[in-house]
Length: 140
Image 1 (cartoon, one colour):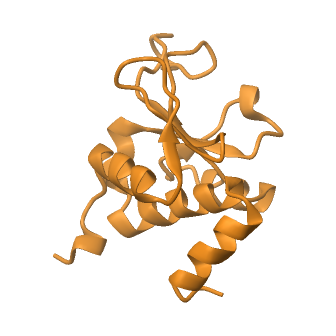
Image 2 (tube, helix red, strand yellow; image 1 turned 135 degrees about the vertical axis):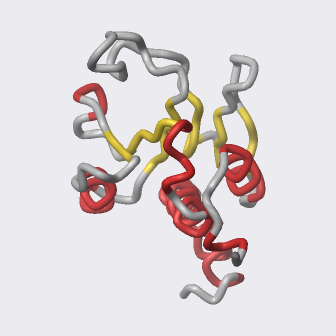
């Protein structure tokens, strides 16, 4: 199986996010990095919060990752399919981000996950950094 088509893993989140240019980890909780570019978060591992919980038990999810998205249309594209592992909560209404439980990450391929992370980085990087990265990857 080609690496790009294999199921994504949590390690892939760390590898792709930290591998983007000018990235720092501003996380203050052990094991819950907050990946930033230019002081702006683009991927972060949340602590359990009251807005994301198991509907049957009420237990807060402890495995939620937040990914910034470029636009509301991008957000909708990721969360509107009920079979998608991406979701949102009322807390994130109007916020350009989607959520993913790490317990569902294998429903994505490596390429799908990498694209979401790259788009998150591009949505938060300065115009100059984004343009440079896109040029270097032949995407302009």
